Length: 283
Ligand SMILES: *[C@@H]1O[C@H](CO)[C@@H](O)[C@H](O)[C@H]1NC(C)=O
Ligand SMILES: *[C@@H]1O[C@H](CO)[C@@H](O)[C@H](O)[C@H]1NC(C)=O
Ligand SMILES: *[C@@H]1O[C@H](CO)[C@@H](O)[C@H](O)[C@H]1NC(C)=O
Image (cartoon, rainbow, N blue to C red; front, side, top):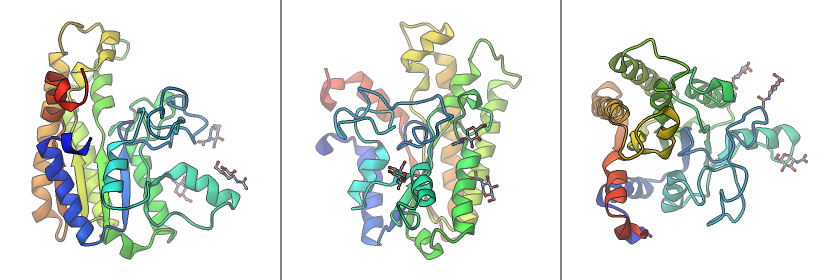
């Protein structure tokens, strides 16, 4: 598969590879189903689950709570830099509480929760863990010295979230009060707050992944959107959010001394997969 990775993903990986030469000791991950390694699975109150077949079938050979048949992008990056895959925070928490492990893992922790968004209210009826609580979980661990502060400077911080907020903007039973532009700005304000707080807690290598073409997901049919083409209004919001993320990353070098920001460009890669699937092992 690796030889088929598109060029921009290779660029991203080469960033991580050079990071590896500088010693990547841990990975801390925040976001939604794209990154969730099983947090929802270990949250018995949460109704957004992937703990049944065929999830996990092609790599782990059993469901792990990941919303994919195989590994997530975070898993691939982790393997690439030579780290063991990170545990979901809630699994580690249960294990520390029940005494089956002494302390939290030193190779990083995955805080991502499928269904969550950058806006606190997104999919709260499913009891997902919003970005703000994911960050608080991380902060609690650092406050309580469960995470070595020196480790943080040599760690990667991966962020990917926003698809669920934008998808939910179009839910027919919950009409938005904000204009599309104001809604995207509110989302970006939360991401900015996240970057600000995670930097203050010690993060220095931060990768912000942008969104794929959310308006092309099959679930758009649930919203009454046309099924013979992508949902243009949704993709327009996605592109404007992505542009905002790009700007945020560009401002990081001057705003946050010592930090390195990377923008993960996902939209065009996914469109390429959709346009010529046979080049990427499908079709
Ligand atoms: C699930 O909900 C119950 C009742 O509200 C609460 O006591 C418990 O702490 C929750 N569990 C988790 C894992 O959030
Ligand atoms: C502790 O929790 C983990 C994760 O749920 C479980 O696999 C393990 O069996 C538990 N150990 C004990 C001693 O209860
Ligand atoms: C963080 O720790 C505080 C104090 O122990 C606790 O009340 C809170 O629930 C924790 N927050 C999260 C998101 O785990």
